[in-house]
Structure formats: C-alpha cells, structure tokens
Amino acid sequence: MKRRDFLRALGLAAAAPAAAKAAPAAAAAPRPELLDLRVRTSGAPLAGDRRLLATVTPRRARAIVSFRLPRPARVRVEAIRTDTIRIGRPAGAVVWRTERRLGAGPHEVVWRPAASVQPRTYLLRVTVIGPGGRVRVYGGHRPRGKVDGPVVRVQGVDVVVTRTSCRPGDPTDLLVACDAPSLRFQVFHYGGSARPVERDLRTNGIPVTPPVGVDWSANVAAPARLRVLRAGQWQSGLYFVRATAPDGRVGYAPFILRPSRLGRERVAVVLATNTWQAYNFHDADGDGWGDSWYVSDAIRSVEVARPYLDFGVPFRFRDWDLAFIAWLNRTGKRVDFLADEDVEAAGTGDALRRAYDLVVFPGHEEYVTEKHYAIVRRYRDLGGNLLFLSANNFFWRVRRDGRRIVKERLWRDLGRPESGLVGVQYCGSDNGQRQGPFTVVGADRAPWAFAGTGLANGARFGRYGIEIDQRTEASPPGTLVLAHIPDLMGKNRSAEMTYYETRAGARVFAAGALNFAASLEDPQVGQLLENVWARLAA
Image (cartoon, rainbow, N blue to C red):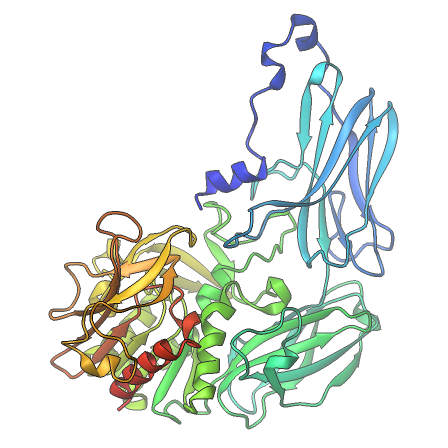
C-alpha cells in the first residue's frame, strides 16, 4: 500500500472544507478550537508519559482527555490504530468512538480500552465541529511530525531479548516494561503446529525451563533490565521467552539459539531477523505511529532490539517461518538455526561453505547488508546450495549502525540484481488481492522435483501471491522454470518457481511466491519440498 493511500484511509489527509460552498455568514463563523488539550491516566504516570501521551494498563484503566472549549461545539473523539498494515484488515481502524455536544468551559472525555484492545499506541483523533459546520482536527499529525493530539499507549508485557541470537551457555539480558508487581518467566522451544494459538504459544512449544517468579514491584514505573536467561545445552532452534503478569497479560520475545560452532549440522536455516524488525510497528517515540519505514519515508532506520506487537510474534512470521519449522519437525530434519547477524559473523563465504552444504532462507529475506550479500554469493560460487522459500529476497541493501539497521538502496540499482543470486527477483505485489495456483511446466526437465507428488506438466496446485518473483536477464544461464503463475500481477509479471545449477556444483531453488512456505501442510507441496531438500542437502 502506498503511503498516501494509507494516510487517506486513516482520514488524516486534509479534507476539502465542507463549508466551501456555504453562505458567507457560515464562512465568517469563528474556527473551532480546543484549549489546554491533555491526556492522563487514572493512576500515576509511567516513564515517558507527558502532556499528550498516557499509558493505560489494568492498574491505570482509563485514558482521560481534558480540554477547554472557548465556545459551544460538537466534539468527536476516536481511537485510531495506525500501526497495523495487515492483509485483509483496514489500515487505521477506529477501535473506539464517542461524540458529544458540549458547552463552553472545561471538559473531560474518558476512554477505557476494552480487554480485546491489543497492546500498542493509539492516536486519539479529536474533531471539533463549531457553528456553521467549521471543523478542526487534533491528532491528524503524520509520522515524525509535530504531535498535536493525544496518544494512548496500551501496555501489555513488553519483553525483549537483548541478543537476537545466542549460543548455549550465553548469558542474555531481557528488557521488560510492565507495571505488574510480579512477573513469571519461562522459555519455550518452538516446534509444534504450523498455526499457533493467538496470544498463547504454550500449545506450540515445549518448555525448556521451569517458570521463574520475579518480584517486579521496584520496576513498575519504568522499563528495566533483567538477567533471567542463560541458554542451556538445548537443540539449535527458535525459542520464545514468555513473561506473564498476575492480571493475565502475556508477552513473548523470540530469540534464536545458534549452535556452539557453525556446522554442527550440514544444513543451516537463516531466519530473516532484519525483515522481522523492518515490519515491526512498535511505537517507541510515542507519536502514535509505528517506527517503521513501512509507515513513513521519513523513517530510514529501525531498532533491532524492540518488543514486537501482536504478543511477540513478528509480522507475517507465522505465515512462513513457523510453518516451515513445523515441517522440519514433522519430517525429522536436523539443522542449525542462524539469525541474519550470524551469517555476517561467519566472516567469509569460505567459512560458511566449509560449515554447510545447504543454506535455507524460509522467510522474507528482503534486507541484507553488504557483508551478508558477499558471504552468501561467495558461498554459492564455491558450490554451496541455496534454498529460497519466499519471494523478494536480497532486495534492499542495509547497513548496521550500532543497534539499528539503516535502509540504503536497492541491490539492483547498485549493479547487483538479486536474480543473479536467487535466480528470480521481485516483480510485483498487491497485498494478496490476486492469488492463483502454480501450473507445473518443468516436470519433464526436472522429474526429480515432482516425484511422488502426482503433479505433471499442466497440473495446478496451491494458491499464491502477495509478492512474486520472476527471471530477468541477470538470471544464471540455464535457470529452469519448474512452475509458474502467468501474468498474476499484470501482463508479463508472473510468479516463477525456478532451479539452476552452476559449474561449481551449486544448486539453487527459489519458490517465487511470498507465501509458498505457508502451504507446506498440503501433501503435494510437502512432497515437492522433500524432493528439493533431498537434492540440495545431499
């Protein structure tokens, strides 16, 4: 979605005055206004609260908007969720609204968020309608603009593992923000269903530690650091720290346990941790907008150590990463799990090649650094095999600046089109409005890929789209199309599932559609991946 359309959906763009064609008398009416606009909660303020920002919790259950009207007016207050760009959901959804006719003088409007309102910040858009129908809006500010309306932060349990990836035995700190007097922490290893239960990942993970209770009464007013986690001699994989408050609030923080040394297993799975944070709409500065470059062009960098919205589960993470990890466990695969920064920590493509026969990118590996790109390309050039199960991979060059990643330029604009490595590259997206089945076209040239699937040339399977890839002139010679979705995003913009080999012996498979891994419960798709895995991991 383009940013101007996102803003328009919120109703934040300036509207043409309804009174433009009104009578001269109406046009002469004074412009309505609010004086001394503030927001506070029903309890003591928390760290970061200020005149136009207040934090609501079960212990501070009400957001109280106060103001003074110099003359009678109609006042409408709406709570706007601005930081969720989701497939199938309207951007900028109104989660609460009230409207009153008020006289001159001081007033208060109270919002008590329902239990179903998810933890995050909300813009309170205050619309004042005065005599003659003249309108003034507070809370219509854009991201990184001057905040002119109230913002309410609904706090759950914000928990962050300060190190995205750690080794067995490493001490790891947590950053926690919650006003509960006590908290309980427990670590779970993900390895269950491909469809985790919202709000509670316990049904999808195996506990690897007992719950640990912590007295949090000294830290209720501000975030604090806690050393409660030291990774055990556990299997390399994806883990979650769960933090639970006595009032039922729950927070989750994912982290990756990498092996004590590269190459414990001969296959590495790289989870797209840079992309996780690029799509993280957590609002740290409290302006009511998520701190992501998907929200504003004015935002060029994101923190890599932030709590995630949606109870600690990164955006669209369950659609590919969790489904793939569940497939690994169902099929008994043993792999090393790595974060994006672990690829860089390998140092060179030579070291990565010595450690692994196959490197798998199951998710949306869109944002990679110069060093990451160079290591993976060198790995491929040395005969290392690559498996891409999503789309739009190696698209943007980013750089690390301390605890931030900074978006720079497209790799293709730097003379290194991603199709030269992946085989295909991004060619279109539409937020999933058009999706379709792959049609098999390469079964005769690559019968090994479709063995046991029941799929032959002309057969169709699945339903894919959202973002798609196709070949370009930079694709390696001999890149074979295994299946395609012709003209899915318009003429000559097709999704292409491809495979190629190099003279050095590298074998590279690319799914060509963003949501391919989400379909691995389909027996035909699961068998197709099993065939590809056998060829690339051999």
